[in-house]
Length: 510
Image 1 (cartoon, one colour):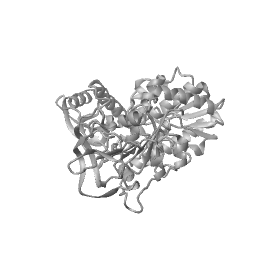
Image 2 (tube, rainbow, N blue to C red; image 1 turned 45 degrees about the horizontal axis):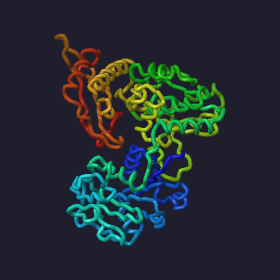
Image 3 (cartoon, helix red, strand yellow; image 1 turned 60 degrees about the horizontal axis):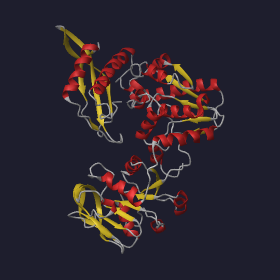
Image 4 (tube, rainbow, N blue to C red; image 1 turned 90 degrees about the vertical axis):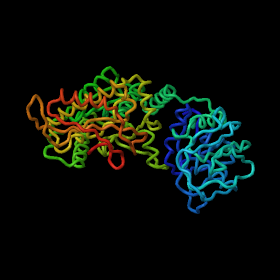
């Protein structure tokens, strides 16, 4: 791609992906590379800026990650964050030592607003600290531009070499005006023009796909999830009916979902094969209660169904997958081709006759995928679809999966999602859904005893889905949901709201 490039060199920091996302959000294209990346490769990539991430090591340890000093002498503006900052200081002859008092959390910080890094900021603000070591001596040519009560060198700069460092983390929300600090580095120090947008990306990606595919055929497993739907839309814009999408309806979709997926792509110039496999999936679920067994059976059955349909098509040139950038980053730098089958497609490449994998979303974060979907004209129903596990509602039915439980769950889950959207919380609560338990309890309705299922409601807020907090949905909204479900859905007489975080729980119940 011809975009200006910012490289994020990863030293194992917990916020690496977040840094990259913040850079992208600022309109600048960036890629995450290992700290082991050679000087020669960096020169070849010709970045306009480099960011060194944090990390768990101490720079003075012999086995800690290091950086080639030559990178610091390329004349490219560099921002070191936390460990990355300490590494710049250590490499250039300064001194980093264990801090007598560790700094964690929000810390009042004084900024020198004459520095381009802090231009336009308040002189005193809160920054997010997370360090055991600190800088005690800075190399010649560096000056302090920020400090805290315990840290004299909370940030430094060397303007002649365009080197900057912050002990705190400007990429996190807890650093007040932290985004402005990153923006200043990108636009004032690096002179980026901000040429990264989804419209720009779409145009470039479409041209690249056309060039790569030529007159070949592409096969995509369309789950109806955000990633596969956007991948389908992008490929459709590029190659039209050279694309074949196979949608397998396993019977565990949410209410109206299969119809919505087929309707969304009905007018697109692609070959859409919809397979109704509900009966055979349900037959496989008979007598099965263990969640891991459910997952395994559904995954294997999905492969068999997909294989059967793919064989009818014959040889294809490319197998398309909805791999996105976090998958690439988490796989580790240096893997030649990262192959990530969709979560319910397991070992798909072993069953399809194709010559190459194509991953059109490989360089995008999830929020960028959603923006791209909108840019390509997909409906909000698909672009903002709730995260959904591959086995679908089968793992939101606790215990054995039955048609009765699925029908009850579809209706109850629909009401919950409808009321969350009606309250305007559908973009604030990152994931929300209903679970039908295997427990029945006594209730009363119309002066008569009932003995019906208990329904669990789950809502979480999260940035990465690795950890999550339960969503503080207002009681009045939960009351409306509870009243509607118990009034409108036969078979439910008790509703509970899950208030556990992840960890110790997971987001899904099974």
